[in-house]
Amino acid sequence: MSGKSSVKIAPSILASDFARLGEEVRAITEAGADYIHVDVMDGHFVPNITIGPDVLKAIKPYSDKVFDVHLMISPVDFYIESFAKAGAGIITFHPEAGPHPHRTIQSIKAAGCKAGLSLNPGTPLEFLWPLLHDIDLVLVMSVNPGFGGQSFIESQLARIETIRKRIDAEGLPVELEVDGGINFETAPRAIAAGANVLVAGTATFKGGPAAYAKNIATLRGGA
Ligand code: DX5
Ligand code: ZN
Image (cartoon, rainbow, N blue to C red; front, top):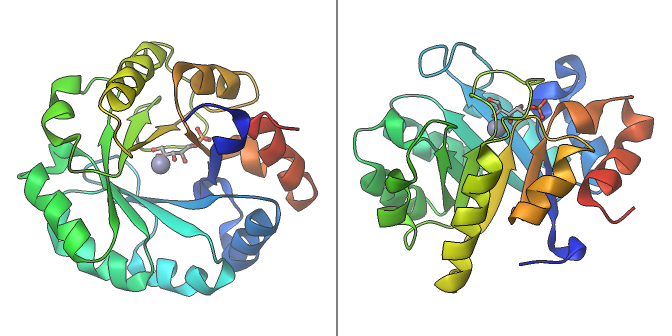
C-alpha cells in the first residue's frame, strides 16, 4: 500500500460552495478526486448539522467516483439503507454512536456498501482490533469531528503507524484513511505514517475551481 500512485484523495465537500454543490462535485471529479467525501452531521453526535440522504441523491449524478459517506450521527443503523439507496459506496461510522458496532457493519454490508470504522482522536484502538477483519476501511480522525478547517492533531500519526503495521502484518485489504487538517504540509506526513486515503476539505477547495487539480495533485504528492 505504499507508493504515491496508490494514494487516494477524498475531497470533503463540506468545504465546497453549497449553493453550487453539483457543479463543485463535478469540478473535483474532473480535477482528479478518487472519492467524494460526504460529511453527515446531526447536531447531536457532533455540534454541527450538514446534509442528509436527499442531498446525496441529488449530487450523485455529478460524479462517477465512489461516494465516501462519513456518518457523524447517532444512532446510525436506522439511516444506513437511506444512504445506501441514495448512492453511498462506502459508509463509515463511529463506534461510540452505538450500540452494536459489529451489527452496524453487517447492516452496511447487507445494504451493498463497503463498511468503514472511524476513530476519534481520543478513541482507544481497542475499539478497532476486534472489528479489523470485518471492515473495508479505517478512518483515523486527525481533528475532533464536527467542523472543517481545524488544525491537525499530531498524536494521530503514531496511531496511523500502528494501524498500518497491523493491516500489513495480517495482509488485510483494509484502506487507511485520515481526516482533518490535511494540507500540503501534513499530507506527506500522513502518507509516510501509512495512510493511503487522504480526506481534504479546506486544502482541496482553496482558490476556487481553477486550483482544484493542482491542489489534489499536490496533496497526492505526485505533482
Ligand atoms: C470533520 C470532517 C472532515 C472535514 C475536513 O468533522 O469529518 O471531513 O470536512 O475538513 P478539513 O480538511 O478542512 O480539515
Ligand atoms: Zn469526514
